Image 1: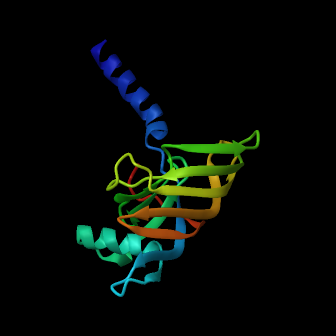
Image 2: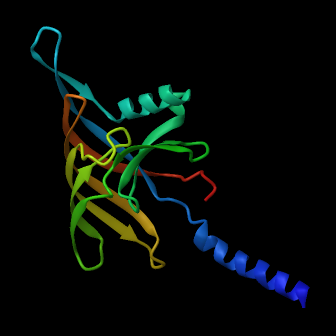
Length: 178
């Protein structure tokens, strides 16, 4: 009787494991714009920035080679992270999931989203906002095949104003083992 219970438990875990260990959908994201600040001469200065700035900061803060990292969007979480491509380790970048409004079609394949932006350093105070359109394609099992998300953002951190646009591109394989 005891062996049968152990076998039944093992079988149940085996059957449910694929549901629990589902890979995270990741898509490369470009995040490009201009940052504005007051320069040493008292004039407003503008400087270009991109997702590479997020990647470099995470690389520097964690002692990782920036070439091992990518800036990605996670559609199910509505956030962006910098992910290490070899093993799926990640660090938060910009979150959009806490406070947003979606307007979508009936099958959730086209979504217009306005979202407040957050990051870990600023805590629960929004930095600014993003507006974009997301188009998703699903297979017959409900799995995400592709995700296209593009739009604009405006936010400020520590007296610097950032303004620009974003867009997703190719899928990135989740190597986290989940």
